[in-house]
Image 1 (cartoon, rainbow, N blue to C red):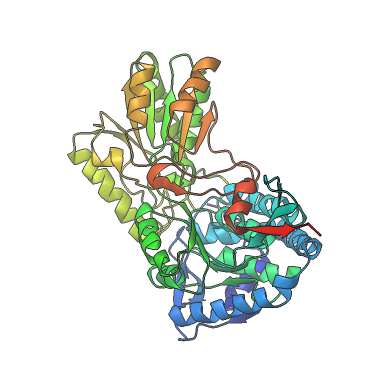
Image 2 (cartoon, rainbow, N blue to C red; image 1 turned 120 degrees about the horizontal axis):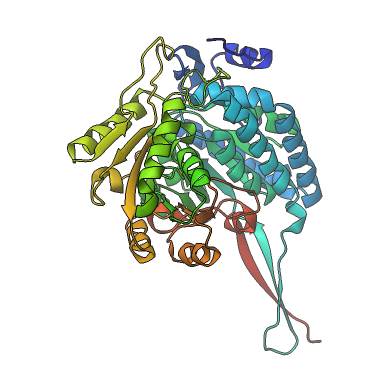
Length: 499
């Protein structure tokens, strides 16, 4: 196994331990002085120490964010914000290799993936929203009253707390940071404790780009502590999160302290649906990728695969063939397709579901067991693509989000049956449809209860295309002008024009 070398700047970044938070325009240690160890999931080795924050650190960050809103950041003209955000985007692009390496070291995702997708999407997100500050318009309102001029304006909502997960820190982070900064808000970002490094590096790039002190703060530490502190803090005006539905429900309760604005992207159990008239080879390859990219640790993983009966056996055989050729290993090994599970806790969660699936009567066709050296590095939690058939619709593995490399394959007969079963979930984040019948594609897409539906493709995003969920997958949207709307308040102003 020949691994790619760590970039010198990444090595220097890791060696400057412990990694400090970014608060008020400075790198600072936690007030308590506590740290925790960042582990490389590919081999279990130590990466660095990271400062571990708590309520006091959130209080300090809120003070810094408020000072920014009352000071130069809050008074900055739109054109100046655009210049800073463009510089920020340019720096993300310039440092794309460092960011890609940090994300792969931190969460085990293949370096090929983070180079080709994550770091590039992060720069594109920032470039897109860098153009928005001078384009956030109000409206004139034609009220039916004589000599009355009425107009609206959009103001920054204030201090925004952002909570992001460990699976796609660069993408989720910039999806949320970019529009919030474009609208003139001050941010307190809480990255996942097991994958904070890329966000700390990103925070440093923000300072280098010229963000005023307190405009972007990064506070690291345990989710239960910092997430609680953010969502219940009366000085924070909005919380935006990508996370589990259980965490989202707790944040909703905590937000009542000051009726916080909320945008929630939560759990998922996405149906991916292959009709008999689909391009079957493309559908098989697409369905495999939809289920197993990033070892299934994806918010939109196509983990419920519905296949029309005439092509069911062919699809299952195709999936098994790809699974047998899938190479797993260290994130820095350019020859591998999939990396490890992020940590032991997540591995135990996934394998608990696999055990439950087998006990429920589902048929395990492949996978389900941890891989061992010399096939993979020691110290990592490697779980191969795991495929179940004969799964009951009411089985636990059919209903609950597993967030791992597990797909259930179901057969169906009619379009009506498919729609009913696909919608038989508390979630509604994403879905896929594979068919060459254009009318069917539009018809079924309109009936699926999900915030995004891909037709004859899967897992594509753009900063100008809204993304978010139905039902218990949350509310509000990332990307597009809807993201700008969610971090602004609308003010209506009435002015009599009579003499």
